[in-house]
Image 1 (cartoon, rainbow, N blue to C red):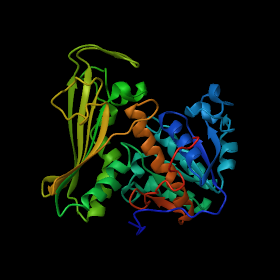
Image 2 (cartoon, rainbow, N blue to C red):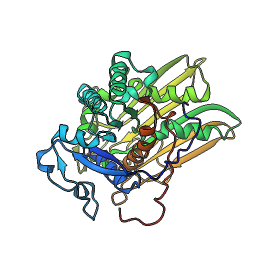
Image 3 (spheres, rainbow, N blue to C red):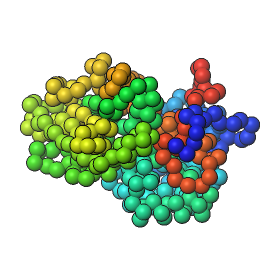
Length: 375
């Protein structure tokens, strides 16, 4: 870790730093709430793609009761001018538009705004990212005097800092496993659920998210981060994949998922030493809770959970179950990921310009945010 402290306490006294939230989907809503709640930050703008959202108050878009006095805009240049010297929480999807997302990040950095984002998976571990991706962003960061921190998928902290912290409680460690178990029927993202992950498609459909090499591109950086933190030299990173069909029709808010189509997906990204997986990121996803009942399920029977398992002495299991937006587990996971990113902004603004990862950026306790708040 570049920073010797696990926790970072932001220094007070100065004016709140301006932050623009780019995108108001599942992560963007949570990011707006996180900025509004942070005493060291000020919501300076909200950038949207949909003209129908332009002019609406940020509070309305984020599900907050009290207006924030910040109207959404589709004007990128105007929004970036508001973020100069501060930060952009970039929550626009990079799943199906990765090149556009990278260009957006470079634009923000050159405009003098540090960026926190979950959208470019290959940059979770910048050290192992392709130089063609990393170097232009590093040049942009230095030119703009800004910094970039990428984290947040599943939910970021659960696959880097948490396993390292939990692993430090063991005397010996045989394997570190980071597990997400999720019921996609509660997740309002039909394009990703159906087309990227393959739910509801015939079993001969090849979901792009699990094509050979893609899981390692998305989650391999997190495996390498944990390996680096624990002093493990990996021989290779490999993948496993299992899929299950639905035995009956399922209908939810995303529509009909027919019997015989894909109803569950399970894969692992494994960091291997001497032929054995020693650091593992595992995903178990379903379109209904009764699909693949022999696969892992959330300990409390809910719709989703994140888990870290340290196989060693002692054996340690940590379960994290978060809810938000009326008790929704997907929204809870999004909120924890967004909070990790937004809470990192003060540290990034004080850091040297550059690209940072989940081990570089320390945790930020909620100083000044304990007790009831209007946000």
